[in-house]
Length: 151
Ligand SMILES: Cc1cc2nc3c(=O)[nH]c(=O)nc-3n(C[C@H](O)[C@H](O)[C@H](O)COP(=O)(O)O)c2cc1C
Image (cartoon, rainbow, N blue to C red; front, side, top):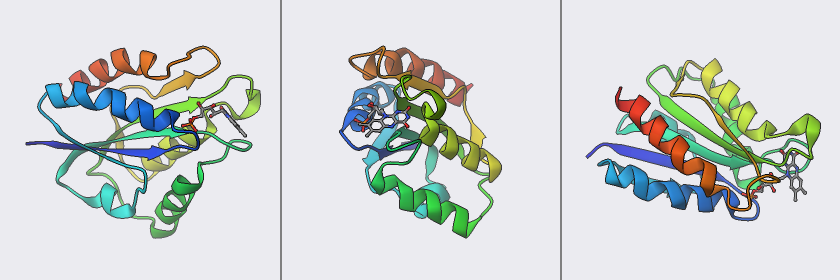
């Protein structure tokens, strides 16, 4: 069974809720889905994964949640080719943080792309000032993303 790993960066649990919410959609499409709040480089190099998904909020002033920061730093340090990797990004933020809206998701997206990985579809930037439940916009998005992954 093809695998998808969801790598979560969260402070208050919203990005984890999104991962938990989209997991059954992917399972229904026949994927084995694992969720990790402690992502590591091995998740990017594991060729067993058909793709990885990032669900990551922004904290501070455009910063990564603590658990995600070291993952991001290690990608930069290792600096390997990720040309085998397909990925998607769900970025959680709040538009009242004008200048740094969804910056963590934007940064990981640009970094993966910079190392040669292929993003499937567009990044989903969720404005949590607009959605009480961040999972709401993620459900139609994941349908589209999964269709593009096979297509
Ligand atoms: C202290 C603090 C700083 C934040 N900084 C930003 C920011 O710079 N940019 C942004 O888009 N959202 C920012 N947010 C909004 C969070 O990203 C948003 O509330 C998100 O839903 C939190 O997700 P989580 O529950 O997974 O941590 C901040 C929130 C807090 C409480």
